[in-house]
Length: 206
Length: 176
Image 1 (tube, rainbow over the protein chains, first blue to last red):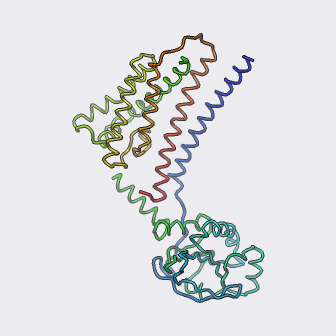
Image 2: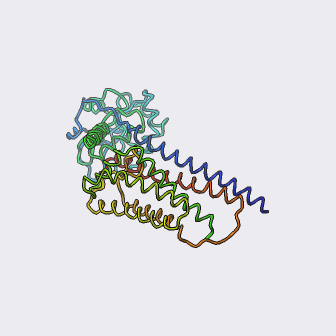
Image 3: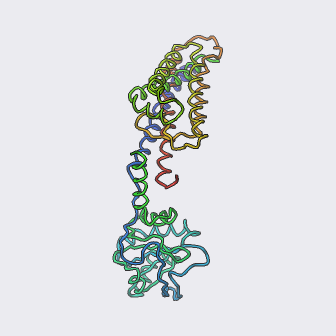
């Protein structure tokens, strides 16, 4: 019995030592990650309505036959995330799981609206294939032209007052979230935020 | 109290002090600047104090390891002094002040939890004054005395590091 206790205690001490070392190493690595891997924001191109400007008010037709007005102020206080996609764009397809989870997680803050143009039947089969029926889907060539969408998937975040708060090319979930983050921080883009941060840190060090 | 427990806690405190002294001695000039930023000493006293503090830490750690009963009280007094310096600056509203706790590389602003941390360390050091229970030594006690302080020091460093990480993360998120 005594020998068993001794053996197990020695083993436990070894394990505790290794675990404490591992915890320390992990804490250091997390620190390095925070310092080196700054968040990546959506790529902002200058074309289209600028961030901070009023969004053009457009009446568009949704896939389910209803009519929606994009860009006017919303009484429910939510923002509109306009996401331009196309059934033929592979990156859009990869982004859809992120869009679905974001729609659920940010439901109280943001309404996600998918936007596209082209042949109606293609969109209907796209919605069915990708199980998008719960997300509003509007078809309007005018919308893409107004926002000067050149690359897909392109996202525009319009706040409840109808002001464009963030926009950009969103290739990943991180890009998509950066738009909401930019709105929450009150900056045009995450890149602007990081630049400002770097300037302030550099300034205090000097 | 069991002598092994007291020895483990005492050695842990001594190791923390040794490490603190080591990183201050490696960058005396940097420590003088940190000390100056605390704005508690006249400028003329800074170079002397910058050498005196690591020397005190080193001396206290050795006394503690040697088991001199007064060592614990000395260490507790030193830690209380640090806590006072941090508390005074927190009361002045200076939350951007580099603590100087984590060595030259880490920039970690002072915070309220550091006062609590110092109190815990001081309690560990005061373990020297507790009357010891007389008992025989087994070789297993040797394992405990070797591994215990090392594990505690690693965990202490991890907690410090996580505190510093939190500051960086908060900066990235844009809070002041």
